Amino acid sequence: MNSLFGNKGFVLSMDAAVAISIVIVVLVISSFYLSRSEDSLPKVQMMKTGSDIIAVLDNEGFLQSSNATDIKGEINDLLPPAYNMRVSINGTFLSQALIIETGTEPVGATFIGGGKRFFVITSPSPGYGIIKFWIWLK
Amino acid sequence: MSKAQIGILDLIIAAVLFMAVAIPSVYFWNLTRDRLITGMDYSEMQVKAFQLSDLLIKSEGKPTKWENTINETLALGLAESDRAISPQKLSALNATSYNTTRKLLNVGIYSFKIRLTNPGNEPIMEYGKNFTGQSSVVIERYVTYEGEKIIFEFTLWK
Amino acid sequence: MRNKNGQAAIEIIFTIGIIIFTFLLLAAFTFERKIEVQNFAKGAEVKKDCFKLTNLIVGAFINGEGTTITTKLSENMTAEQNSLYIDENFCGLSANVLKQNFNLAKGKVSIENKNNSIIIQNV
Image 1: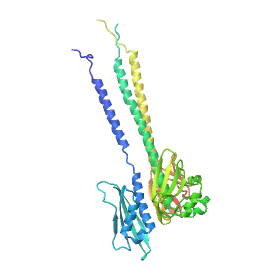
Image 2: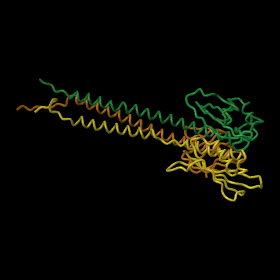
Image 3: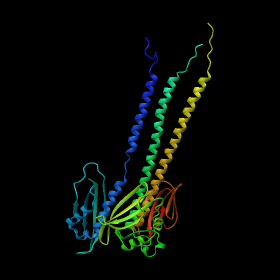
Image 4: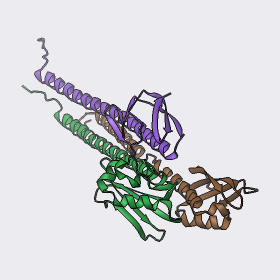
C-alpha cells in the first residue's frame, strides 16, 4: 500500500522539527533571562536620597531641637512619594532614642538602604548625636 | 538509462530550515549585544553622574578657596560644608566658562547641566548646556542654600 | 550476472565538500562569537574595577583628611593625573587630586587622603 507521497518516512522531518523547537525554546528563554538584568543604580539613588535628607535636617537645624513633629514634617516634605523612611535619633541630649517613621515597614524581601550621620548639638548644652536612617520603596 | 537524482527537494527544504534558524539567531545575537552595550553605556553615565554630583555638593574643592583663584583650581566643589552650597562658590562657577568647568570635572565625551531650584520649582541658578543629545541621566539631590532647602539637579548627557 | 562496479561520483565529493565548508563557516562564526563574548566580559570586568576605584578616590577626597579606604584590584592599573588606565581601557577621574602618578599591581590597595591629596599604594 502506498501513501500519498510514496513510502518515504518522516524521520528526518521530525528530527528537524524537534531540533528547531529546541533552538527556539533556548533563544526565547535566553532572551527573557538577558532582558531581566537587575539594575542596582535605583538602589544607589534611594540611599543617596536618604543621606541627603538627614544632611538637610542637620543643616537646617532640625536636629538641634529634636522635635519629632517638625522632623517628620520636614521628612514628608522632602521624601519622594515612592519611598518610605524610618529615622532614629540618639545622643547625649536625649534620654531615649527618638524614632520617626513615614509609613509602614516593608513586607517580604524588599531592599532597604540605610546610613547614619553624626551631628553636634550646641544648645541647650553641647553634645553630640547620631541619626540613622532606613529607606525603602513603598 | 535512468539516472538517479539525490533528493534535491529534501536538500532545499533542509537548507531553508537551516537558514530559517541561522538568520534569526545571528539577528538575535547582534540585537542582544547592542542592548548590552547600550545598557553598559547608560550605567557608565549614571555612575559618572552620581560621582560628579557627590563631588559638587559634598566637597569644598581643591584648593578649598578655589573661587578666589580659578586658574589654580584642581577640583571643583560647591559646598561650604556637607550638602550646604556656598553662594561664593556658586557665583564663581557661574563666572567660569563651560569649557574650563568641563575640563576640571573631566566629563570626557559627556556634557552637563546644573540647575538649582527651590522646592516650588522656581529656578535659582542654571549652568551648563541644555540637553540636545540622545541619552541623559538626571540626578536630583537635596541640599541647603543660605539655610533653606533646595534641589540640586545634575544632568549628564551625550 | 555481470558484476556492476560502483563509482564514487563527483557529485558526492562535491556534496561532502559543500557540507564541510558549511560546517567550517559555522565553526568560524561560533568561534568569533565566543572570542567576542570573552572580550566583552573582560572589558566589563575592567570597567567595573576602573569605576570602583574612581568612586573610592573621589569618596576619599570628599570625606577629607585622614580617610583611608582599602580595596582589591583584579588587574594591574596605572593612575595618572586624572585618569586611570587598565590595559587599553581608561576612565576619567572627576578631580585632579592624585598626589603623583601610581603604578598599581593587582591585589590589595589602600587609598589615603593626606594633605588634601590622594595617595594610592599596594598593601
